[in-house]
Image (cartoon, rainbow, N blue to C red):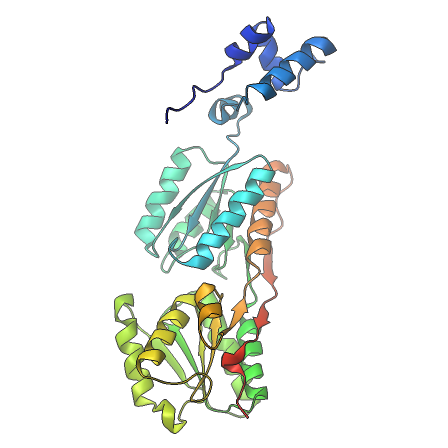
Amino acid sequence: MAFKKKVSLKDIAQAVGVSSALVSMVLNGKAKQYGIGEEATRKVLAKAKELNYQPNIMARGLRSGKSHLLGLVVADISNPFFAILAREIERAASEKGYTVIYGSSDEKPEHLSTLMNTLANQGVDGIIVIPCENSEELIADLYLQKYAMVLVDRYFPDINTLSVSLDNVKACKDVTQHLLSQGFRKISFVAYESKLLHTTERIRGYHEAMQEAGLENNIHVLKFPQDKYHEMMLQVFEENKINNKNIEAIIFSTNSLTVQGLYVLNQLKIRIPEDVAVFGFDGGDVFDLYSPAISYVRQPVEEMGRKAVTILIDQLESDEPQVIRRYKLKPELVIAESSVKKQ
């Protein structure tokens, strides 16, 4: 199918029988300022709508000093959580008259740096970032340059940036307390090796709940590379002899670890929740379709995306310096059969 030629100011001007300059004034909201009559204004606006005229964002940016473009860098676009977050950010930005250009760092700081430079060269007004491991120096440099920026899902406590994230301590503390309320005592926590705050906070939430219950931690940290997680998880579950009740319940700290863990448990023919209870993160179709349905922490993705867009645009459009805040959103536990003890 052939692409339609983009409608220009000249096309509208010719259709109405006026000059391109007059059309430009009307479409930029300056009709009254330049004494353009109501009839001519009405005809120009009607014809622009009829022809589905779309303004040239970059040209507008050159005139106004703003491009109305926002940059977005997610950590891994193949992860359903980040894909949904990107969609919500794009939707919220569009409602406010901004277009989003985004890419995925694939959890690699060098790739994140390249993307940031590319977005800067595209003339974005500001950027929303899900930072990856070892990207503190880059984020700190952007902060020192007073670049308009919001960190989402993860942030660095020593760098004074605006951020929106889940209350990860509360999330994992609530999950652990739920499992304790079901009568489980030997509760394991599975995470991947990371110094990023969202991971350490999730471990802290589990630790606090176990400590308050007078129970020992049983934390399993899977080390990179990621393609070895299946093998490492298989070893953890075999060594801990789930069927002998050395582990009664498992909390997986991310969506991808939950999916991988379910696959390994199925491979070992371990029944959920009869042999072991399971609680995951973020949810997804596989959680609902799995039999039994899997309990998980639901993150407020829509609220997270909209909040990030709102505070970034406020930063861009305000003449006052933005007050640095850490916005922490409440988690929701979705309780299903996988974490309920069989009587």
